[in-house]
Length: 149
Image 1 (cartoon, rainbow, N blue to C red):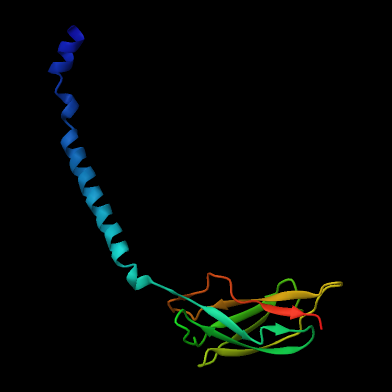
Image 2 (image 1 turned 135 degrees about the vertical axis):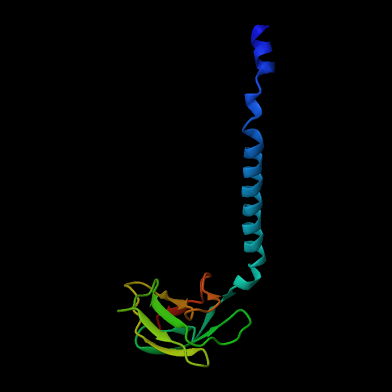
């Protein structure tokens, strides 16, 4: 019983409690404010996915010219985007890069090769959005099909 009486008489247990509650409340409100600002700013940070449209989409092994148009999610051409063409299951001697013009189009010279006993392969297209733009290229783009004649 004596321990219970000492416990009842001890007022020190709540000395720091009010200040701790105030600190927790201030930190909680500040955190909530930051999160709400981030959520309300999401509309301003929206990005548009880019897509590459090659023409022709099918080529044979050997030297060829390919026109690639970069468009945004609405199908509008995008100028100053960097197009990167690299070997996939078909090989290229080197990676090809070029920057789109005002019409969103670029012409790239490729010389794809297929391996022995390989009837078809692909070349991959990547797009680097213009610097400082609201564009992104997260999804996979159309591949160029290389088919043995």
